[in-house]
Image (cartoon, rainbow, N blue to C red; front, top):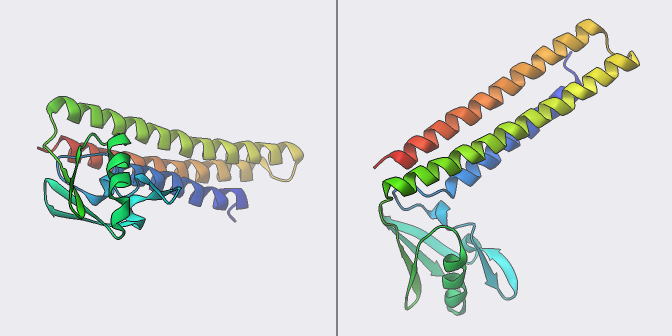
Length: 185
């Protein structure tokens, strides 16, 4: 019998890993990717709206991102939002589209990106461990209250550790993959 707290912890840990992966998509590698820009908030009729909701985004080649807004009046707002964002690319407005040239990354910039990847991976590991701590505290409280025996508590804590290890491993694998992608020339 698995403890309900343990069952509830798994999706939380999974969400921590998935959130990290979404953030990794926005970390620049040497080639163009729509994920770099699709979540940039653009002022659209007074509301910050993700770029992917107001424009078509494509990558015709490895070093170019083309953004085609469905409403031309938002071109300057898109240009302003990209300039304000931290992706480090300069938008070129060309009639009805915005073009972003993605230059190859310098070695120094690659190392900065790897630091970002490692920092985000550490945040995800901390989040997973926090979920583990919450469940462990709950199990210890139940042991003190007498609704859980020592053997049951030990078994549940071992299951919790296996669950935590599995999610920490997932964080490690994904961060190593992203680091390799960033360092790839």
